Structure formats: structure tokens, C-alpha cells
Length: 129
Image 1 (cartoon, rainbow, N blue to C red):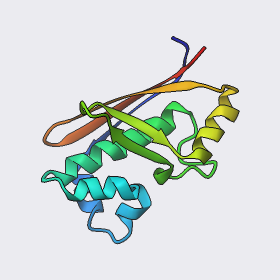
Image 2: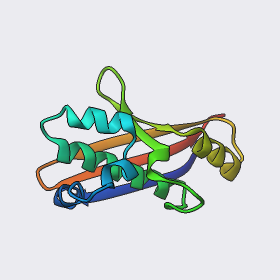
Image 3: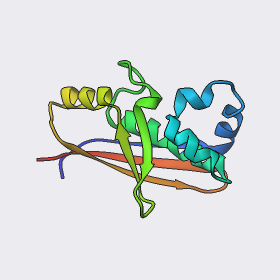
Image 4: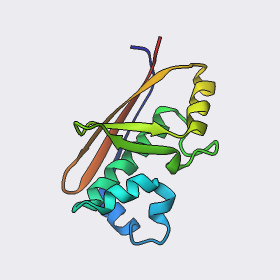
């Protein structure tokens, strides 16, 4: 394993609960697919909180934060059929990573967890050789 970045983020779920009341928040932070998936769920708050934390952890892992024209919607959190979460990047962000780290291939590992009050995400970016 050749780790080129790691990041972690924790968020209080009530912060997302309050943010969901703000007009435009959902569309600024989450992709259309994430929003559609979230609307179908009973526990929307934890769903969105984990994804928010994952996006924050990812930009920490690449060392930029949300600068260099990186937006929340450039990062989409999806799930495999078995439920395991993974990160899907926009073409723009993929190209940015390849240029920044001078790599062609990489793998992003994502772990999400939540409980009543908090959600947490951990990201590792590994250079494929």
C-alpha cells in the first residue's frame, strides 16, 4: 500500500438537521442521486450527515479542502450492493487528483459510521502501482 492521503471528519448530526432547513443547502452539497436516495429514507439526517463527513474527509485526504474549484457535488457517496460505501468523483476532480499527485491510478477507501448524535467518515487514498 502506498498511501498518498488520509482524512477524517466528524459532525454533529443536529448541525445537518438545521442545515437541511436552509434553502439550497441540499443542492449545493449533495448530488441529484444522493438527494433522491436520501428522500426515500426514514433517517435522512444521519444519511446526509455521513455523506457530508465523507466529503469533508476526502478533501482533507487530498490536502486542499474545498479550494481549487473543488465543490461538494464533485464528490458522490455511493454504496455497493452489499451496502459498503464508496466515493465516486467527477471527471474534473479525478483529473485534479491525477495531476496533483502525478499518478494515473488510485484507490479511495471509505469508512462511515454514525450514532444518535454524531456521524464520522474516514478516507484513505492509495496510489496503485
